[in-house]
Structures are given as C-alpha cells and as structure tokens.
Image 1 (tube, rainbow, N blue to C red):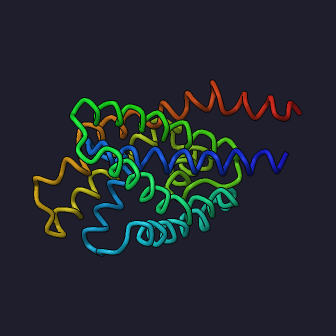
Image 2 (image 1 turned 60 degrees about the vertical axis):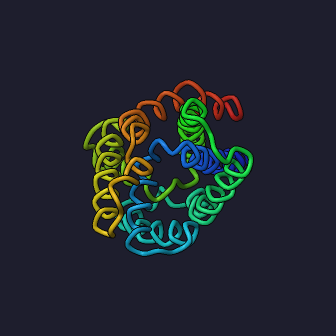
Length: 215
C-alpha cells in the first residue's frame, strides 16, 4: 500500500510540474502560486528552480507549526523536483515551438490547466505529504474547519495573485509584462483550481486509490 501511495505521489508531482511548464509556455498567466514565485523572483533574481526551493522551505514552517500530517515524502518530492521539472518542460516546448500562435498558446493553456489539477489531485490523495502551498488550504479546511477546501483554495489563490503582482511591480517590473504572471489564465486558475482538484479527487484519485487497496 505504501509503495502504491509513493508511486501515486511521485507521478502526481511530476505531472503537476510538467503542467506548470506548459502554462509558462502558454504565457497567458501562470497558476496563482507560480505568480507569487515570479513576484519574489523579481525582488530576488535567482534561478527559478533554486528560488522555488527557498520559497517552499519558508512555507514549510507553516505546516510544521500547524499540522505536520501534511509533511511527508510527497512534500520532499515536490520541494526538490518541481522547480527543475518546470524549467526543463518549458525549455523543451520553447525549443520545439519557439514562436507559438495565440491559438496554440490557448490550447497549451487548457492542456496545462487540466494537467496541473490532475497531478495535484493525485499527490494530495496519496496522502504522503503535499506541497507546502497546498498545505495552507488543507490546514484551513480540515484542521481549522474554516470552510470547504475548494472555497478556501480560491481565497489563497487570489491572495497569491495579488501578492505576486504587487512584488513584481515593486521590483520594477514593467506593466507590459504583467500578462505573463497575471493574465486571463491566472484568473481562470485562481477561480477554477479548487473546484477542479476537488472534482478529480472524487471522480478519479480517491476511487483509483480505493481500487488499488479496497480495505
């Protein structure tokens, strides 16, 4: 059972990271957490993979303080792999499609959006530790009982978008580049990720884990 959960968590993290790379390629707005990281990147210009690890180490303190249940193998996999997989998948797509059309970018966004939510659902359901960012909404929903996960996730996502955009502008980022971190796609992600992850949990991930071990 543990081996199956580890596999499910690993695949979920890899899928999620690849999906984020597709979203960056689409350049219609990244997911809310990536929007936050891009804002931090403007203030602290470091390689994305390294910066992703540092930001998540800071957020890890939240989970340690309030609910260590969400820290596990999945957290470590997410912490040290996601940033570098995002860079790799984005570079591969740019190498193959250096100048994508708007239609192509739109299709890439839709694909990336679905992939990110699917991957997130898989590693959250594996219950071997989630990303430090996912832990915030899960703690608020499951430990503090502040509301349903999908609604709390919308609130945290919107907060990330606002903070990321604010830091980006504070760091001297031009308004012309804002759509790369805050576009129509970002709004769709902020409003849609919670409900879609919840849907994948109920329709795919939880039944899949149940089929793997019905006990």
